[in-house]
Amino acid sequence: MGTEGSFESLLRWAADHGISDSVDKQSSHSCLGRSLCVCFFPDAGGRGLGAVRHLTKGELVLKVPKSVLLTTQSLSLQDEKLSMALKRYPSLSSTQKLTFCLLYEIGKGSSSWWFPYFKHLPTTYETLATFGEFEKQALQVDYALWEAEKAASKSHTEWRGVKGLMEESNIKNQLQTFKAWLWASATISSRALYVPWDEAGCLCPVGDLFNYAAPEGESLDIMDVSSFSQHASLNGNITTDGLHKEEQDTQRALTDGGFEENVSAYCFYARESYKRGEQVLLSYGTYSNLELLQYYGFLLQENPNDRVFIPLEHEIYSSSSWPKESLFIHQNGNPSFALLSALRLWATHPNKRRGVGHLAYAGSQLSVKNEVLVMQWLSKNCHAVLNNLPTSVEEDNQLLCNICKIQDLQGPTELGKMLLTVGGEFCAFLETYGLVNREETELHLTGKIKRSLERWKLAVQWRILYKKALVDCTSYCTRTTCSLSS
Ligand SMILES: C[S@@+](CC[C@H](N)C(=O)[O-])C[C@H]1O[C@@H](n2cnc3c(N)ncnc32)[C@H](O)[C@@H]1O
Image (cartoon, rainbow, N blue to C red):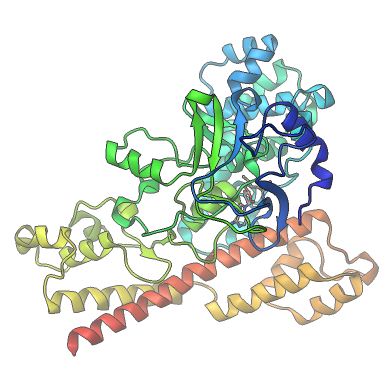
C-alpha cells in the first residue's frame, strides 16, 4: 500500500530527529508505520498519508518536534551569517524572509541539515502566480484574471525586494532567479503551517504530506472567516489580526492540528475516524476554489466553501452594510445569505429601507413582490454574465476532455493525429507553444508544455465550476419564483 521505498532516507532522518506517528517508542528506521504511511492517491492530492490501521477521531497521529521545524528563526539560530544579513533588511515581510531563508539553505546542498527533507519537495507548482499569459486568459472571468495578475506581480515585487540581500549573501546564481523565487514562494504558500511566533509559518517535514479536505459541516456563509483573514499558512487562514474573539474561536475549531507549547511540537489529530488504507486528510482552512488555486495550485470539484461573484451595481453595495466579499453565490447555485439580504434591501424603495432593515438583516423575505423582483434580477444577471463569456459549459467540458486526452497520449504519432482533430482554443495553445506545422518527429510534449497543459486544465476546470454555479443559480431563481406564485 505505501510508497515508502523512495522515502526511506527522509523517514529515517525524521525518526532520528524525533518525528513520530506513535506515542510508543518507535523503531528508528522510520518515523511512520504505526498510524500512517506515505501513499499515492491519484484522485485526491497525489502523494499523501494513509492510515495503516483503524484511526479514531481525535487521536494523535503525528508529532513533529519544534527542533525539526524549518523557520526563519531556526535557520538564523544555526547560521550567524544569515542572521546578520537578515538584520540588515528589517523591512522585509516575514514571508519574504522565510522564502529567502529556504533558498539560502537549499544553496548549501547536501551539507544542509534539512537536505533529506529538501530532496522530497515538489519540483514544480501550479499556483496562480505561476500561470503564464495563456493560462491566465483561460480563466475568462475578470476577477479571477485579476487575482492571477496580482499574484504574479506580488511575487515579482517581493523578489525584487530581496535581490540586494540575495546578492550580498552570495547564494548561487540559479537560486537568485525569479523562477527560483516563484518555486520557493509556492513551497511556502502551499506547505507552511501556522506557528504563533512567525506570521510566515514553518515548514514541517512529514507533517506537510497531509493532503486537504475542506472543513465539513455548514458553510459558514455570513461568518465565513476566510473572507476576514489573509492567507498565512496551511492549517488555518491564520492571520487573525482584526478578528473578533468568536471568529478566532471559529477558526480554531476548523483546524485539526497545531503547535503545542506544552510539548514543544506540532501535533496532528485525526479529524474523523479512518479505516485502514484510507487517506488521512487535514483541513488547512476555509478556502474558495480561486483561493485554493492561488495558494495551493489545486481546486475541489465539490467545495462547500466555494464562492463565485458576479458584478453588482454600486447601489446594491451601498443599500446595505454587508461587506463586498459576503455577496456571492455558493457552488450549488444558492445566493449567499448576505447577497439575498442586500438584494432584498436594494429592491425596496430607499425611503422604506430603514423600516424593513431588521427583517432583511435577519434573512427574512420582505414581500412576495420584493422576492420575485430579486429573483428576476439575479437570474437576468447570471444569464448576462454567462452570455458574455466566450464559451459555454458544454464547450468547456469538451475542451477539458481534449486536454485530458492529450495529457494521456503516448507518442508523437498519436499527438499528431489528435492535433489534427482539435480546434478552437487549442489552436491558440499550439501556436503559443510553437506546435503548429511541426514535422511528426518534432512533436513531443516537453516538460514546459506538460506543465502548461496542467495549469490550463485547472483554469478550464475553474471556469466550468464558475459557470455551473451561475447556471444553478438561475434554476434556484426559477424554483423560488414558482414556489412563490403557487
Ligand atoms: C501540504 S502539500 C500536501 C502533500 C503533497 N501532495 C505532496 O506531494 O507533497 C499541499 C499540496 O498537495 C496538493 N493537494 C493537497 N490536497 C489536495 C486535494 N484534495 N486535491 C488535489 N491536490 C491536493 C496540492 O498540490 C497542494 O499544494
